[in-house]
Image 1 (cartoon, rainbow over the protein chains, first blue to last red):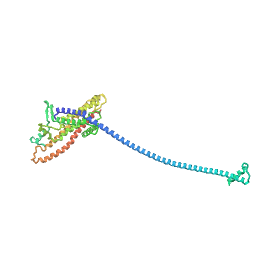
Image 2: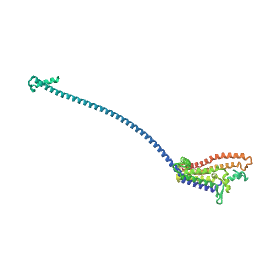
Image 3: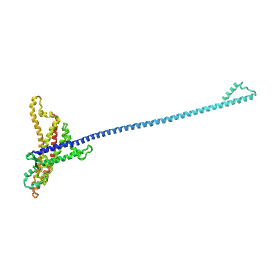
Image 4: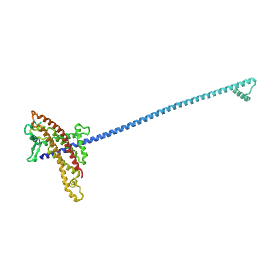
Amino acid sequence: MDIAVTLVVQGLAFFLVVWLVMHFGWPGFINALETRQKKIAEGLAAANKGQKDLDDAKLRAQEIIREARDKAAQIVEQANKRANEIVEDAKKAALAEGQRLVAHAHEEITLEASRARETLRKQVADLAVRGASKLLSREIDAKAHAEILDKLELEIERG
Amino acid sequence: MTASVGESGGGMTEYIQHHLTYLTVQLRPGAFWTLHLDTVFFSLLFSVAFMFVFIGAARRATSGVPGKLQCAIEMLVEFVDQIVKETFGGKSRLVAPVAITIFVMVFLMNFMDLLPVDALPAFAKQVGLGHLRTVATADINTTLGMALCVFLLIQWVGITEKGLVTFFGEWFTAPFHAHGLVAKILLAPPNLLLRVIEEAVRPLSLSLRLFGNMYAGELIFVLIAVLTLGSRLTQFATYPFGVIQFGADFIWTLFHILIITLQAFIFGMLTIVYLSMAAEHH
């Protein structure tokens, strides 16, 4: 074993290599590794968050669709009800109107009939008075015999 | 494989000796000033290659989608970072870079052991270099140099994590804890002794373990190569020995892949453990 100056040279060379590695080699790799680790962790977290957001959105979408469907059904039902109501109302109105018209017509007819009867009665009474006066050949005072005439009128009316 | 050396007629001993001799240069007179050029060359070569790739990739490192090179290095970085995070309790930013440097550098230098033992020396001979040892970690200077660096880092981490007073105080008060002044004074010398032994043993065990494994591995490759040393194609014995040599070489190479990785891992792992022990309060 010949320990000699080679030992000093080797030792110094080794020190130099260690120093260079420590200052110019090692930090570059460690920093790169650590930064990448952080990036990967962040990426994974973001992916998880994205997945969760997507699930939430899906659930919300389903809820919205269900709500919309319910609402639509409700609206259709309401519309049907309203339509029925309208038809019903129209029917009622038409019926009422018809009844009103019929009643009016009845009234008119009754009025017309009574008017005609009145006219007819007056004419008959007149005719009867004229006929009676002619028949009795004497003048009958209409005013004096109003009672008789009224009675006559009544009889005519009944007859 | 052995043609270039076997012809010289020096035999096994010379062949093995030749393989265990460093390419040296004498900087100054005196045994200490002998520099192992081959060891320094290969360790510097791998240092530069490692720096070039690692720091180059670190400059272009992105936190977005990484390229193939960045992916490969990041696997290693994460592996080391994980171990350090699990083992090291302190706040020092020094441990992980030290560990990854040791892993990579030791592995690369060990890896030279898997090249054919004569390949690079034969090439060196062509260029005019008489000797060449390619495995820098089979040189005690390399392993002890690194281990002593680790030793200094252990003291540094100890001081910065605990502060000077606690750090030096523990030399005299741990592992034997005493209550009372007399007991403290009595236990101070054994504590200091144990501490010194503990600290001295660490770089020794670190360096000798790696050196021993790599030296032995290299030696076994050399011994396998000796099987057909000086053989000629006209001799019958060349053929069975050639087959045995191939088989042995193949098996030892497979096994050695495990050893070089394991030794790199052990050196780095023990460094992390020592540094985390230094950061712990007793």
